[in-house]
Image 1 (cartoon, helix red, strand yellow):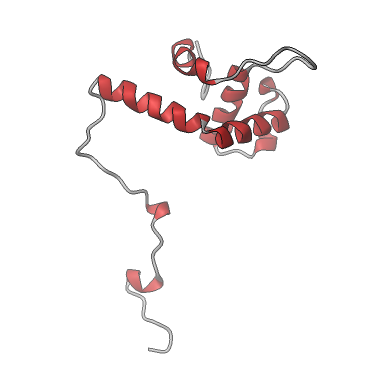
Image 2 (cartoon, helix red, strand yellow):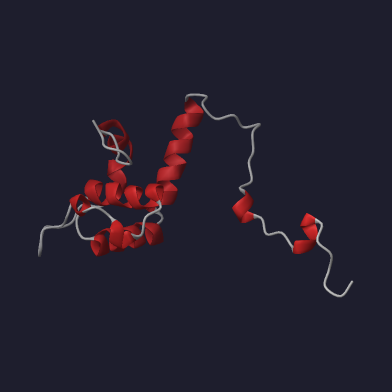
Length: 118
């Protein structure tokens, strides 16, 4: 059974092919699944990278892997794959839309405050 914020075996099977295998030269590479679990732990818990538990490996390695995947578009591919799977199972209501309040910038006047000097 997966621990909190970690992928289950079924979820890993869905995205495992998005991660690139290395040629095996040099220092042994830590598992992509372990690194992804570390990324999910940080993003879901809201903790700083340096506060990540040791079971995921060095925080700097997890962060480097996160940056690489972000720059390569791996997370975008994961999201598209998840959306397609959920849509195929009719679990997405296309009539429902949401805007997160943190993404909408409001001025002081929008809350009824008077302008300075008025």
